[in-house]
Each structure stands twice: as C-alpha cells, then as structure tokens.
Length: 163
Length: 163
DNA sequence: CTCAAAGTGTAGCATAGAATACATTCAGTG
DNA sequence: CACTGAATGTATTCTATGCTACACTTTGAG
Ligand SMILES: [Mn+2]
Ligand SMILES: [Mn+2]
Ligand SMILES: [Mn+2]
Ligand SMILES: [Mn+2]
Image (cartoon, rainbow over all chains, first blue to last red; front, side, top):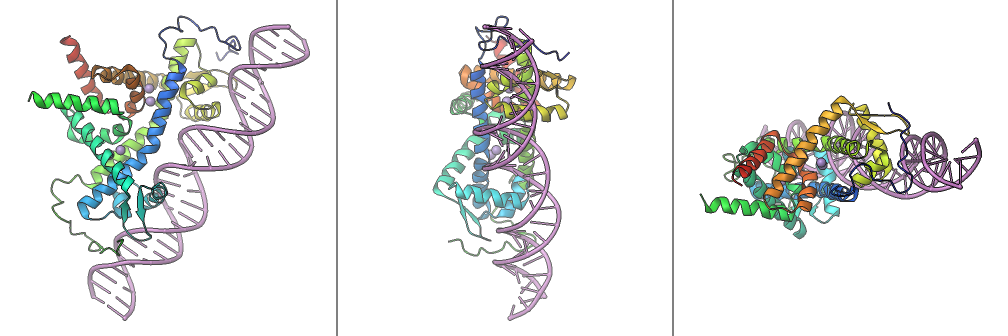
C-alpha cells in the first residue's frame, strides 16, 4: 500500500467515476468551512458580551473573577480576552475596575441572548432535557444562521398555537 | 462612572437581589462552556476524517491539495494538521503519498458523516434551504450531543411516517 | 489606620490553526 | 529518459486561547 499513486492527469483531472453531476463541489464545501471558521472567531465575542450583560443584570457589575468562574477559565484568560474585546469596541474597563458594555457590545449581547434562548427553547420543545439543551446551545448558537433561527422560531410558534 | 466598586463582602458574597433560587449557577455555565471548548478540539479531527473518507470514496484517494481545496485552507495548514492527526492515530501517510484512515479514523469519519447527514436532513425538514442547511450543519454537527441527535432522528422519523 | 486576602495584572510558556515564501519530490510528456 | 509543472514539505510568522507563577491594587476587617 501507499503506492506512488498515479497523478490524476496533471492539469485538469478526468473526474473519476460518476462525479461531476450531483457532487457538492469542493468550493461549496470550502465555503461552509470558511463560514464555520468565521463563526468561531465571533464566538468568543458573543459569549463574553452575553456573560457580561448577564452578570450586570444579576449582580450589578461584571468583574474578571465572575467571568472566569462563569466561563470556566482562569482570570488570566479573561483579562486578556477582555482587553482584546475592548480593542474591538465591545467592552470598556479600566485597571482593577468592573467591565462595561459599549453600545455595540450591548447589541451583540442582546442578539446573542435572544438566539441562545431560542435555541434552548427549540431543543427543549423537541424533548431534549433542560441541562443538555443548555449545554448544546452554548455551542450550537454560534452556527445558527438567520434562516435557521427563523425556522426554529416558526416551529416554536406552531407548537404554541396548538397547545 | 467606573467607581471603585464596593467589594462584594470579601469571602462569601451576599447574593444580590433574588439570585440564589432559580439562577443557573456559574458552575453550570462553566460546564457548558467547557464542553463546547472540548467539542472545538474534536472538530478538526471530525472534519478531516470525514473529508478524507469522502475523497477516498469519490476519487479513490485523498491528497493534501484535495483536502486544502475542500476545506478552504492552504496546503500548509492541511499538511501540519494531517501530521497532528496522524500522531493522534486517526490517519496515516508517508511523505509525498496519499492519506489513509486508520481503523479509528474510519470510525470517526463514519460517525461524523452520519451525524452530518442527520443534521442536514433535520434542518431541511424544518424548511431550511439545502445550501444553508449544509453550511450551518458544518458548524452545528460538532455541538449536537447524543440526546439531541436522537431527538432530531425521532423528529425525522415522525415526519416520514405522516408523509 | 493597617494589612491581609481577594481581585487584577503581567511575564512567560504551550498548542492549534492559518498564512507567505521558499525548497524538494513526483510523474507525465515530449 | 530528461524536464518541468504540480504536489508536498519546511521555515518562519501571526493570532487566539489556555495555563502557572509571580507582582501589584483594593478594600473590608480589626
Ligand atoms: Mn456560546
Ligand atoms: Mn450563549
Ligand atoms: Mn464540521
Ligand atoms: Mn461535516
């Protein structure tokens, strides 16, 4: 095994077997993967904004330690990430003080919270337990497009109508 | 603003407002985030295994360039990732040769493919377009727990029954 | 008013993932 | 069977995330 492997006709491969037709091209695949990667980059911003908003709502202010406990990382990680998100214009804070959301940060937080809630509610409406729904949603939420989120809400609305 | 901020009672904060009761604790949150992070680590392995299997099925072998085009990254990234996944025991390959799946790699690929298909089918059954379903699934799939996947399949089965 | 513990910040290290630039190997053609 | 273009590999750099260890600030007790 691991033979030299015949080069697929240099430039312009001959499309093996019955490929060409209904095959999702490499480009389509690549596009999906790129979108997923972009979502991952946004993920941190969304989770932090949401967490800061939640902390401010529940305890009046968001401190580095609180975020660290909530996100399950050390205060060092939070500190550095907060600095980055501050540079991005989502948060503001001064040394040894609490963390605040900017106008944009509030928008991101609100959008994230809503989406998070929709995803959790949707999963639960399918019979998924509360705990698992929450856990799965934490990852799923960042990859739900507008179209899919709308489909989730449509589903929930129909459920509600026929209770 | 950004006042000194009263220290929340040093050790043992007094639980502001009406928190204690129905509040998802920081620990629960942290758990969800940790699971999501773990899923992200597995993500690359799953996508690569799935892609390699798909390439082998569709064109006979998986080469670095093919993976690069499919995943939308440079061949350098693929090369290094393949080396890592080889060290992890999912792939095998020798310099300038094609890439193969190990026994474990095949298992991962098969599981990933199935889950990917279920997620796509589920989204489409909710009315999401094929293209968006495929794109969203590429990210969602890695955060769908066994319980949630089962719920998706249950839903699809019911749909099929009452066609 | 002091001061120790809690909270923050910083230095330094590691891994994953992505890129550009350059080097090396393979294989089909001429 | 030599050669050249395609495929691979390597060197180096960058960013995002984590961590441990250690330093510095704040603040509530005493
Ligand atoms: Mn999340
Ligand atoms: Mn969330
Ligand atoms: Mn994927
Ligand atoms: Mn996939």
